[in-house]
Length: 144
Image 1 (cartoon, rainbow, N blue to C red):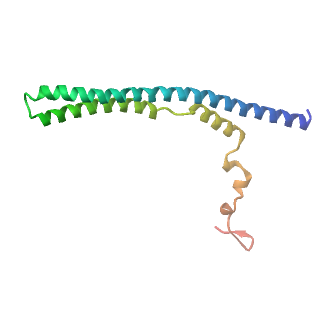
Image 2: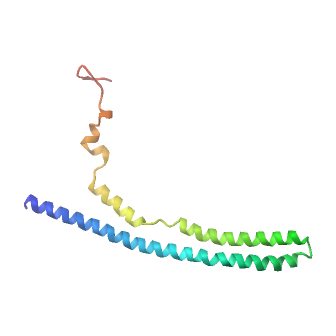
Image 3: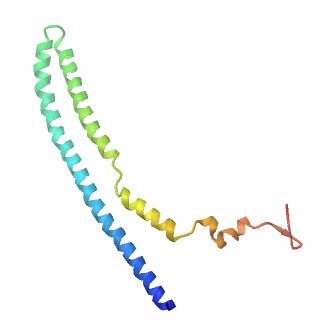
């Protein structure tokens, strides 16, 4: 096989590899966007419920608690309870979002391709002869 043919095949194979990485990134971005969009929608759905629930429950429960405590303490207790419940709901969904690794498969595939195509720095002759790693010479002899 001629060198030109081999070089052309290498370039074609590399082009196909890059195209596959781009296709994978598109598919993964689409899936990640859907996941994130649903979770953001859930957070947006929980927020009004927290506000409405906070208002109604504060009034109702505070009026009921007025039998055992002062009205201001009753309203405070009900308000804190609603804030805690709403905060926990949002924290659960936010944790799901934080645990999601965006483009995880694409990054792994790129790392694999890079490791196969490029030698490690320590294995390259240039790294072995880097100026800061050469032994110091005095009169043509290495210094210990």
